[in-house]
View 1 (cartoon, rainbow, N blue to C red):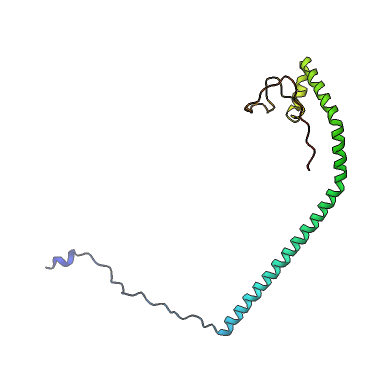
View 2 (cartoon, rainbow, N blue to C red):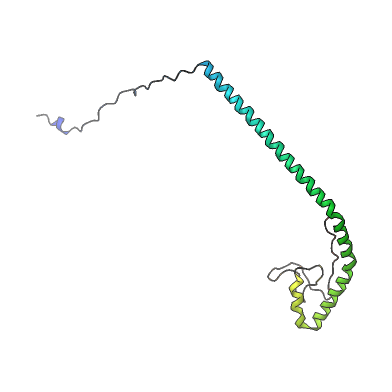
Length: 161
């Protein structure tokens, strides 16, 4: 009795040593077809370059026109800006003296202080910080900010030069 034949597991079937070869035939391309494809690519490249040049030229023309319009508006508004700046410089001393008077009134009449506090952080160059405080909004600590007894008024800078 062959007991050794019955106990051996079955082996998978042997695979061939080399996989089946695939056909390697490529579609035949002629030299004329390659020349035509090359010519088509050249045409597409030339069209792309021309389109890019047209786009760049149109963007430059648009930006040039916008620049001319802005320069014209600036030159039109320049005299009005100079006139407003001169008026401001004439009236600024009166504004400063009025604000100093308001601050001295607020010291004497504490119920007026909230009115000044409303504008204190919008106009720090004219309004002195509140007593014992700083010119920063509440909750913001400013290092080295000491309270002064006299209001500090800084001259305003002229608008953009």
